[in-house]
View (cartoon, rainbow, N blue to C red):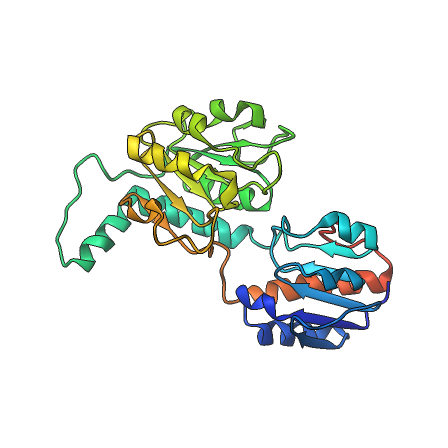
Length: 308
């Protein structure tokens, strides 16, 4: 494989300014071009994109500028001999900090005070409402880059961390690692359940009514994974019935979250618009990853984060 140009698809604008990204890529010795949805590709082309288009399989290499690549037809890329890479490994800090912010907000009641501020109300909490993260248990489901970013920060705040991982192998700062078949056991004693796993056939709908029933009534669900890993109807029912205390949700089955969704209406639910990984330096992080692979291609080395 020999890369003659890097095409920056306009879809990357969903995560960062395409111009800044193209500028950051320009220091790697390969011409960089911004392209639209009518562009054609061929040998020597690399494409950086947010989503898939059929034309991309004619390029030599396609890089997804996000960690999740579930909408990319991996089999088609493999059949065409087109390399496909993703951006896993760069989101641990941003997502980890966002999850800690969610947990601190819910524990320290910051969301309630903000709502009261909007109404110019001096609204004191009930004595038993605020709590500290120190000493509380968090269960992190998925112990890849995202999950470990959460684990390390939660542990630093004095939380007891347990986790769920397909292999069951131990992870630093995680006291107990459960396998997915023991999910309900893993979440049973946790004040927070954080979802950080990829969307796969096995994880789609993984968190549903039985999971909420296994959770504590004062527990919170945090989802920074993908919306479809949660049965949203089951989540709404659990919130309505008081099976769990609340949730912090960054991802949803349908995005943007429809205005008629009942999830908007719960005082104890934080809704954010799929921004847990957002940072003003994202273009630099992804450009560095793409640049690393440009150098690996020139050296004939295996690509980082290759999924096809």
